[in-house]
Image (cartoon, rainbow, N blue to C red; front, side, top):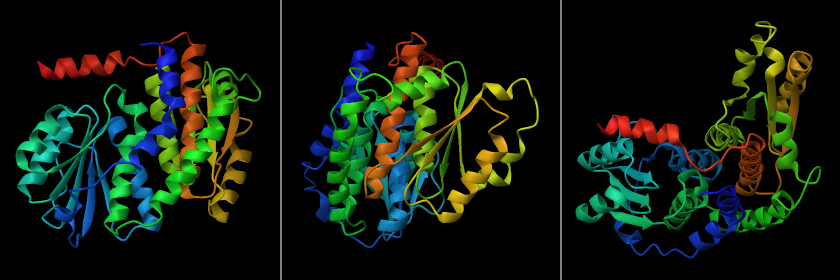
Amino acid sequence: MTVEKMMGYLYNLPQQFEKSMDMEFSFINGYQKKYRNILVSGMGGSAIGGDILKTYSLKNGSLPVIVNRDYNIPGFIDENTLFFAVSYSGNTEETLSAYRQAKDKGAAIVCITSGGKLAELASQDGYAVMKIPGGFVPRAATGYLFAPMALLLEQMGILKGVKEEIQETVQVLKKMRAKLNPDVDQPANQAKSIAKEIKNSIPVVWGAVGTSETAAMRWKGQINENAKSPAYYNVFPELNHNEIVGFEVPQEMLPGLVYIILRDTNDNDRINKRIKVTKDIIKDKINTIIEVNSQGESFLARFYSLTYIGDYASVYLAMEYGINPTPVHTIDHLKAELAK
């Protein structure tokens, strides 16, 4: 699978949202009840939708959302839990284990998958399956792995404003892709410029709690998987209580660090002050600081505008290194060893 294939995935991300809005939730009547909590269980690219949902629901939802990246589920899960089992392949062993435990606890289970063992079990057990298209790599299917959950919760009255925010997200991403696609060169193409700046460095991505924290996590994961490069992330204000102290030694390594700060128009004023002071503290000790600003009005549009630049930048970074971004041979090897 080529670089062009991954670029196609990125370019067509808006279509994932459009197709998700056409999905039917005919099973919804069987799931209408008063829940106490929502748990999203998944791993890697399949879990990122849960992270987005968790942050989004803090302001737009009526129930707490917990994201579970584990074989086991929390002890409080019971018949009053709405449980989303999310596995793009349908064969993620941690998610299958969590599914079985949620079933034993009597949770209301909805599965999001392209097929595999998860779809098979859900069909046998009588749980709803929100089937999404196959043929992607999980990290390229973020629209399908988030939007169906959010749209379902909106129809259930748990979230509000989802459809309108997704519609704005589609428009923002379509406008952005016109400047991010390979036909556009620097400096007009921000993602290409970022890739060149972070090449031969260790990128560290900083976001802010409640706005861009999941976007920072996404940047880190995309650089790892697409560019096969180390990358790390943290969030304000927590990083000001520990990480900010760690810029004294080893002095010979600090110039190899590049910091990417994700800025959102809804960041707290105190966060903006913290960012300014933090930049002044580290600017003479590291390679460079890059700032990326969100676009759009709604939370979802702003969030996806930040991740979209990171998605493209990670693929352009792979190209800078002469690497095919699509395969993840190390993960494949790990899975093969675990299967023995």
